[in-house]
Image (cartoon, rainbow, N blue to C red; front, side):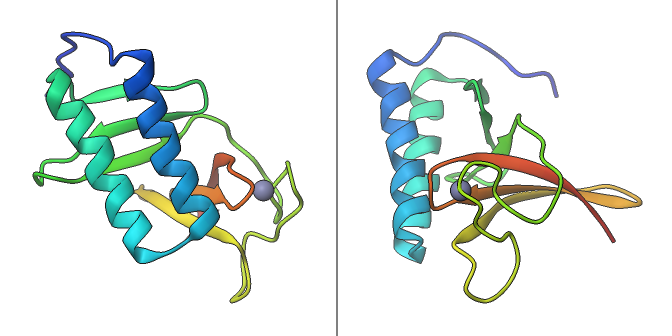
Length: 125
Ligand SMILES: [Zn+2]
């Protein structure tokens, strides 16, 4: 299904999306994750667009009403956030998984760090 682009969200609405993502990444609560997803979807629905590209990530509406995905445009390798050095893995990590794109031999995982950066990494199965 091709993406239908009718209009671009205003600068203010782009900031609303950015802020919702930042609040989740810094607070890392389930409530903030819910609010982030609903906020992004509400903006996309209001402009009748299925996705919007920011410089470092893409937000996209899912088939399920009220939800959306955040996919990184920056790719990293290694086990740490390149910007703040936080470890990607482990119980105490301040990095959260924002989305997973499943492929045959690997997954493309989008991570969001508490420093506010969003990035993707290929993960072997
Ligand atoms: Zn970081």
